[in-house]
Length: 120
Image 1: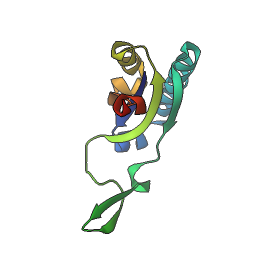
Image 2: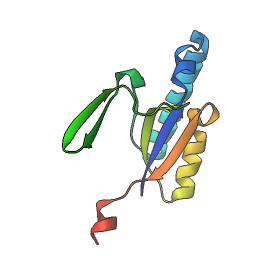
Image 3: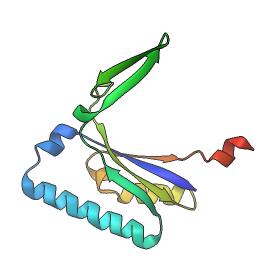
Image 4: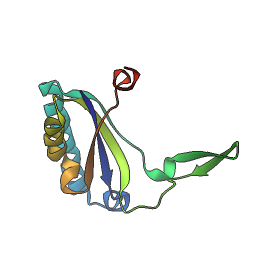
C-alpha cells in the first residue's frame, strides 16, 4: 500500500536557522532518503518552496478565486513530502517517526486511496 508522509515545519524557523544547523538538517534528510531507497520503500519525495510562492485556487459561484500565498495562516506549513510503499500503517508510521521532521515539526502519515479501493 502507498502512503504519503506529509512534512510540516515552521518556515520562519527554517529560514532563520544558522548555517551549520541547516547543513545538519540537509544531511539528516539525505541519510533518511537513502535509507528509504535502500529499503525499497521510496517512491517519490520533494521539498516544497515556501508558502509565499504558493497560489491557492477556489471556485465560488462559478467564479475562480486566485489567492497568492497560502490560504490558511498556521504555525506549521507544508514543507515537503515522501510517497512510500509499506506493507501496513504501522510500517508507514515507523518511517514517519524516522523522518527528521518528526523531531522539529510534524509528519502526517496518510494512506493513499487507490483507484481500486473505490471502484470495486
